[in-house]
Image (tube, rainbow, N blue to C red; front, side):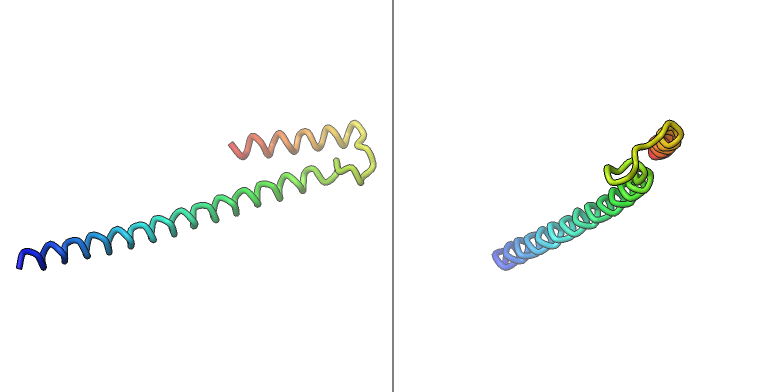
Length: 80
């Protein structure tokens, strides 16, 4: 009877271990997805601000550089 109890204990332990491993993997995947979504949103904001400074646009004048610089400063200080 003790042998059956030992095997049952081993089976339960292995089952819980596999289940825990699966849950941990899912949690890790969810965290990576959330982080990548936040990263993409940050890059989108940055790209919108830098649109005026693309190589395809006309060169920025002093006022354009000033506006872009202030916008980037606000973005960086707000992100912290």
